[in-house]
Image (cartoon, rainbow, N blue to C red; front, side, top):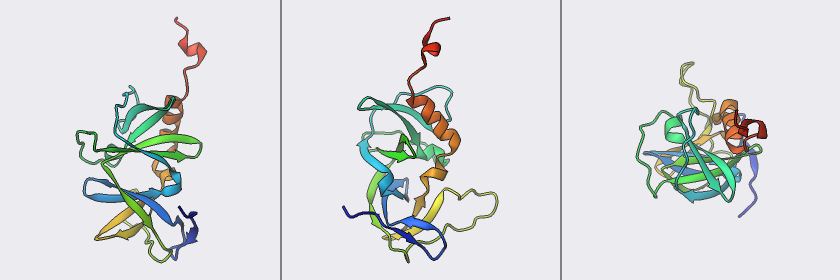
Length: 174
């Protein structure tokens, strides 16, 4: 695989040249390929109480506890019953490992600097900060996600809490 180049687009933002595209329903999305650690088929996820509804739970990945974010719930989409055909994209965000539950992985998009388009302005009521841009993907438009913005500090704090072993103090019976 070729090294990922960083290009400055005419819209004034920096974007990676390769993205992993995936589907949620009929819509296409993309994330920076270099943030992807691996792609796994859907397997059992252990639910964790008192977490945001879009935190599906955690899974064991070779001994590491990995929080799983259900992107359908995160985006307010209709819930579906997950099967072995769904996919978990294991990503690195900062120093954290997390999983993104999606419907299917599509392709790797090679995006040239002239192909990247800025997110449309939907007005103050619609938060598009997590969209780094848009690009044509065949007949469709793929929405390119900024994982650092999409997964807020609160999400990352929950991920840290779920991934860290319980402290000795918390493990002691009262």
